Length: 173
Image (cartoon, rainbow, N blue to C red; front, side, top):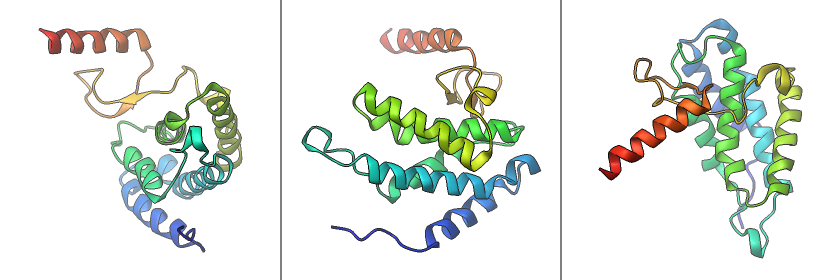
């Protein structure tokens, strides 16, 4: 049994890290540092409380490593990756889905997570999912466009599938 981390220490730790990282970004992006940290901590706490481990879901355990993975994923971005605050919010949504939702084993839990994420986006960023997200699922990567090899949103899913198929063909030949 591990006692949960209490107080605003986690908030201060991750805010300091992200504030330093966002210092080289546009002001519309760096101004969302507190929102990103608060939203991530809120999702972590909600998942920890609502998605308890059971015999069939024994891997539904969440810890500080999961928090750090979200921030690590966002930290892959460059200024060209996040030209606006909305791009940061989409990247954040992608990272929390990658870290938390990818662990969920059934559609009921995944649907619950998406609805919870939409609510947290509205609470912490005052943004509606439908106003920001134009292509679902939200995907980011640095490997689809060889001319722009920085972490960016992948809007053309068909081109992404073609690129993955090319990688697979190269690997298998």
